[in-house]
Length: 137
Ligand code: T46
Image 1: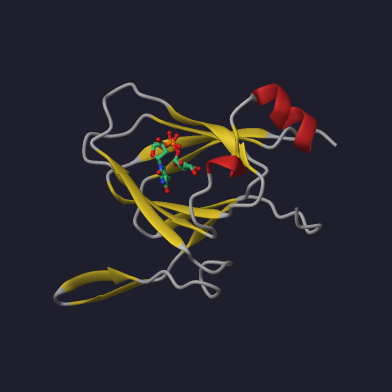
Image 2: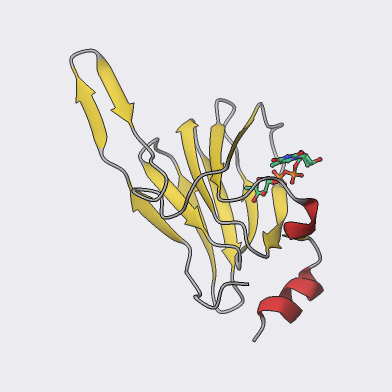
């Protein structure tokens, strides 16, 4: 695991626009503070569904609702908080040490996720007791 501990945060990305409409750019190792190796998106989520319920060992992610909105519950043991993603320019930089749950998806929500690593089931901590053991200090 990296010795540097980063903290999840919301960043605002500049909106580029002209008479044709709007355009927003996300760049690895630039506006997004890590190299991007994987992209996925979550959509058509059933009303009332809560997803996530895990932390990671190493994967850093950037979450942005490119359409609609959803909320994300974050718990890094020292603080527990809820953030609202409701704009294509509002990006949650989600660090591996945050247990996270996504919920309250609007019907039109498309949650885009950029990840620092390729998919690896072994990188997930899905047991909360294990999470506390790993990140509890
Ligand atoms: C995260 C939050 C924000 C793959 O095969 N490859 C992938 O790259 C991903 C992301 C998922 N999957 C498979 C694994 C499961 O069988 O797709 C299925 C659903 O994934 P999961 O239950 O992990 O989905 P969420 O919404 O709970 O979590 C996802 C990401 O997995 C996770 O890294 O932090 O979105």
